[in-house]
Length: 289
Image (cartoon, rainbow, N blue to C red; front, side, top):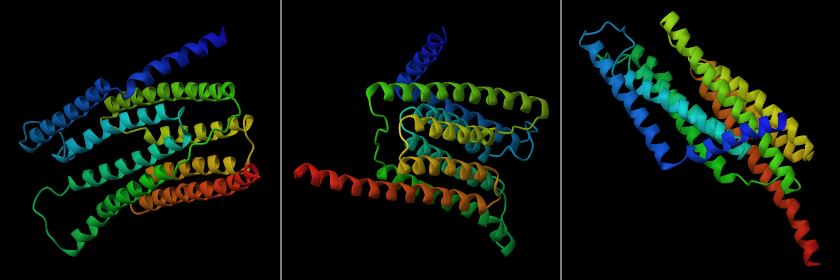
C-alpha cells in the first residue's frame, strides 16, 4: 500500500518533469513573466501620475522587480526538477538563482533614483551597493559557467536497480519540496494581504535545501563510502549554507559569501576531476598489460 502510494507520487513527478521544459510550457512561462511586467509598468505609471496612491515603492522599476520575482519562482521550480537528475546541476541552478537575485536587487535600488540626481560624493557612495550587486552577479555568472563545464557526471551506484532506487528517492524529495514551495507561496500571499507587505520566503526554502542536500549525502552512503564522493557532496551542502547566508547578508557581504561559495564548489570540482583522472590511469596501464 505504501509502496503504491510512493509510486503514484513518482509517476506524478515524471509527468510534470516530462512537460516542464517542453516548448508549450516555456511559452506559457514567458507569457506569465511578460504579463506581470506589463502589470507592474501600469501600476508604476498610475503611481507616477497620482492616479493611485500606491506608495513610493511603486515606480517604473517595480515592473522589473516584479518580473524578476515571478521568473525566480519558475527558476526555483526548475531547480526542484533538477535534483533527481544531478545533484551537481541542482547546485549550479542555485547559483543561477543567486545571480538573478543580485541583479534584481540592483534593479530594485535603481528605482529610487528616477528623479533629478545630485552627483556628489554622498550619491556615489549610495551607488556602491548597486555596483557591488551588479558585478557580484557577473562573477557568479562566470563561476557558474565554469562549474557546469567542469562537471563529470559519474554514477555512484553499482547496478541499474540501485540507480533506479536512488533516483526514486530523489524524485520523492522533489515532490515534497514542490509542495513545500507552493505552501510557502500561499503563506506569503496570505501574509501580504494581512500586513500589506510582501515578504518572500526564499530564505526558508534555501534552509530546506540545506537539509535536502544533507539527506541525499547521508542516503548516498548506501551506495558508496568513497572519501572523494563524500567530500564532494559535503562541499555542495556547505555551499548551500553559504548561499542561504547570502540571502540575509548586508551589501558587500552578500556578494562576498556568494563568491566564496562559488569558488569553493568550483575548486572542489576541479580537484575531484583531477583525482579521478589519476585513479583512472593505473587502471588503463593495468588493462594494457
